Length: 260
Picture 1 (cartoon, rainbow, N blue to C red):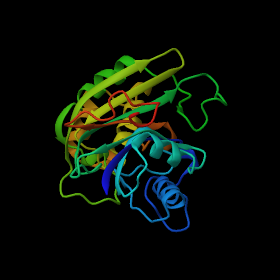
Picture 2 (picture 1 turned 30 degrees about the vertical axis):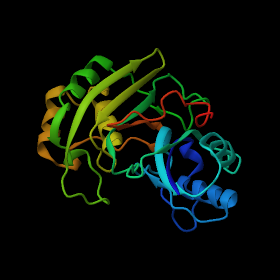
Picture 3 (picture 1 turned 120 degrees about the vertical axis):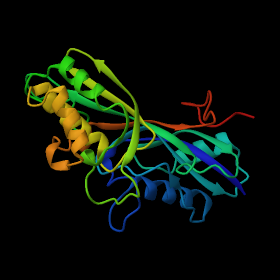
Picture 4 (picture 1 turned 180 degrees about the horizontal axis):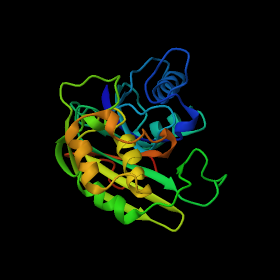
């Protein structure tokens, strides 16, 4: 029996979120069903956290214990052969027995993509949030800067996932700006339910001229969700990376496990 961690990418539009739920196809269920078909036993796959319906992942991390004679590379290839379209294991490696995808995580990085074309493009449907109004990116940058640091982010938290504390540290905010798209990249020690999408919706309001940087700071201080902007659509959000104290999947992305 060994502990294995996997790096998973998936198209969120094909799944009802990460977590297994009766009557709906989820990413966790697809991975567990793939392992069942491959190894003949039900194995629980632990993800670094949940993603909602429609949210995509470039590098979700999951871990599970498995008893197999297949080495990492063969296990990765064989598992991919038993997965449905829309999800792929990018890398797999044996890890320390006490590693847990969720409890060992030290932070996450999300990207929120906004399309700002004059007309909605068929090529971004389900991949980015189309905002028809012009966006002042400089104003969005200034507003986002007010959110960096350790704060109570209750104003950007949706109901439905109780936490012992709403205090999180937003470590950094980056912007990737192209002529037709803008990507907001957020890195924090943890995210509240819908926090990334609520921040994206609020910053879009800043870009439209509805809120100024000082007003966004006031929304944060208020801890009142009603004062923040809308929860941006799920299909614009991507889980980019899960951060750990130890290096993970070094040199393995795109070629499965280590070749012995």
